[in-house]
Image (tube, rainbow, N blue to C red; front, side, top):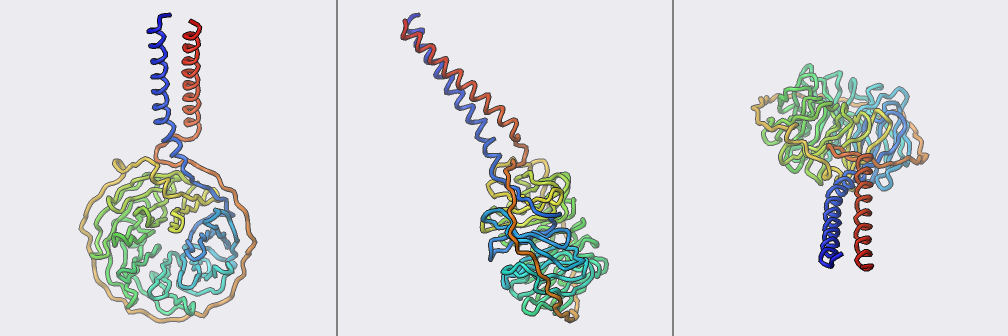
Length: 425
């Protein structure tokens, strides 16, 4: 074989090898990124509500029954079990950083259970209105606001005494559900599911100062301190974005098919609002700068609530359909495909606001029976699952990686064979 031809063959083989390396990298790297560390933690029962405890680095998982679990965000394992009062039907939960306590709305007993995070036991039960649901912690006043869906009222609990110190009367037919505290305005935003609007309550007067029409069935709320906005989940009808400066809707966001059930949380590291899509087993991230969906991530079955852990930069998702909690790192949001171009729109409709006054009625309710809870540590299992957003999952990735390996090996052997022939000649 002529020397020039042998040289041509060797050069061509090397070029083929380099091209395969480039193509393989382009294929395999995105697939590897799609597996960015979404962990799954098994918990007892049917997880429904979450509360992040910044003091302990823990997440309280409240079960549909009279129990719950405590997860360590350092190990993503169950470190304690909770027992709630008999007859409990838990709804929302909120962490009180001033007292190191978790408040749990108990619609079954028309009460709020107070759990100490140092003992993981119920230390007080506070009687409130009918069917308590959402809660909000007012850090400036040391108070917890409770939405009473049956009574169209809010109960205001002092965390110093664990007693109701005021009641707020909402418009008739409000059926309040979710709450969010706005520390910049010292106001509590109330999702009036029955009335299709959001009430704004001043914590200085405990009276309604505005009503904002959201054109939906508001269930969950999340306050965005960076933008001074409140994101309102309209139960499958997308988000309404309210400016706390004007108490008016400034944008609407369309969510993916499947809809949520009011599970909303603000991700301070990303500037995103996270919503759980109950029907599609995903969470969506909505950018607060564009009011558009920037990521979708696959989680467990029927995500019912979400909570953000700023200490670890992770999103915890209560999956009520398969007794698990998904732990989604912020990095997983960056590695998924954006669907904003087809599923999200921004608009600025004119929203009517009205001012109303509501004289608070003081009432008291003594703390009642202290309930003990199990503190036995329980080890849970974790596993990796892929991110959503249309990125292929494991079987296809494995096939592509295997094919790339075979082609790379074949090219290497070809180079060696041609080189050996050249030496023999």
